[in-house]
Length: 219
Image (cartoon, rainbow, N blue to C red):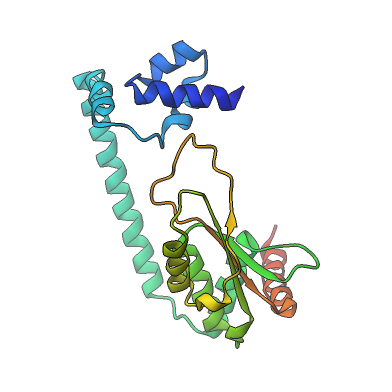
């Protein structure tokens, strides 16, 4: 029922319905409607209809809110740059950073080898940068599996992930094709990639570092 309601919400949004109108039409919470339609592809006509329903006060409020958020982001970015400029990145710190990333996004199965899965190219590149910088690794032990939808250009995406991970195409497995409902095509979505490194001892080392850090810094 939720999937059908989401489909209907997207169709209404593409016709120019406001969130309030979608809520009234489908009898759902405005927050649910907003979540369902936030990535909907809208024609210029639909966008114009939606904009026309905003009052001038609403437009000014939205602009003011965006500006406040932008300024807060600038302050946060400046703080981050100042912090990182005073940190010396050596091999031990690289191992530590890599282990924390793996504890968050890596495979945890007891028998599985090291596997790191993500759809964010920056996250994949960052993990591999710290992994290579922190440990003596054998590049031939990498194997990569890319998960793609039917709307993807397979060759283009495989080349993209090969360049991002700096792993040759010859070490890529056959892509895994994910079912696509056809409800919402995610423009710019590069697919999801799983980086496998066939050395279970390396996985145990990463997990041990993260676990020791959490244990020794906990309450």
